[in-house]
Amino acid sequence: MRYVLRKFAQTVFVVVLVTLLTSVALRFLPGGTDVLVALKTGPGATKEQAQKVITDLGLDKPWYTQYFSWMKHFVTGDWGATLQSNTSIASAVKRALPISAYLMVYGQLLALFTAVPVAVWSAYRHNSRFDRIATTSAFGMLSLPNYIVAPVLMYFVSVQRKWIPYPSIYTSLFDDPVAHFKAFVLPSITIALPLFAGYMRLLRADMIATLQSEFITTARAKGVSTRNILFRHALRPSMFSLVTATAVNVGALMGGVVIVEQFFLLNGMGRLTVESIFSREYPSVQYAVVVLALIYVAVNFVADMAYAWIDPRVRARRAIG
Image (cartoon, rainbow, N blue to C red; front, side):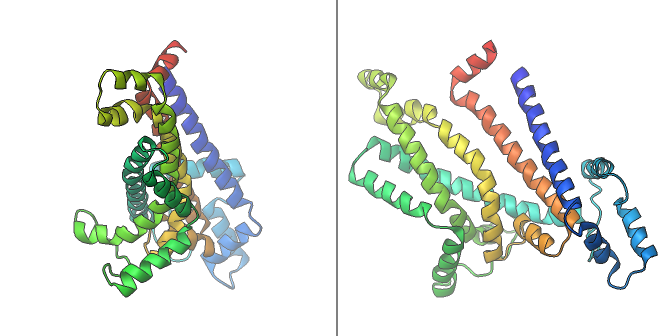
């Protein structure tokens, strides 16, 4: 419990640091205040109108006062409205967040569910034809960026074969599951391909080392079946690198989601952030960045907790510590 609380405190510190740096960076952008005033008042505003906007937005206060005021609004859910269209920022984030969350989860699950069995069998059949084909294919997939995979998939699957309609129209999972998964098939594959390659190569290398351990030799001498050796004895201690990569890749996924959502016209957090940046909607950018940062640190916190489940020795060291 002491370890969990310490990790939780570190997570909170990271979130506070990210929000602080984002707030300060946006406030001190060249012409930041002038841009906010111009977006709020429109062209030809008088000095009195501009000063009123500055006062209403709290831009005349010190940066630390602005930060604590913003944190209060963030915690309470009072995120305000966009500067130009005067629409609710919280509603926009609430609409966009599930789309990006589904896309990242589906991409990760697809990559993991394909990479784990391929890596296990490739490690077991080390230097076989299957192993060589799998490792070569994975190496090739690592060099495929999202902005190449997305249009290729769109052309062959949606334009030429017309198997899946384009653009991807988001539908809630609870309203129409079939339409929901159709909208995420191609984006999820685009996200999953490079992830599959990285996960497969990492797990394969760790599995090869684990299968050469003494306890695996002992298990074989006892007559344990190959399936149990691979999936019950060797897989679990070989997952440290995979769990770490899965957590760290959440950050890369967020960058990939920005590109994929643009290609498939999904109105998720990536697209919302990009549009807010180009339209100079700094409050929307700030809230979007913080939400994405919260997701990232939460996933890494869970991954750190998962180490204790993977290896009991971690729990023992923590207990002693």
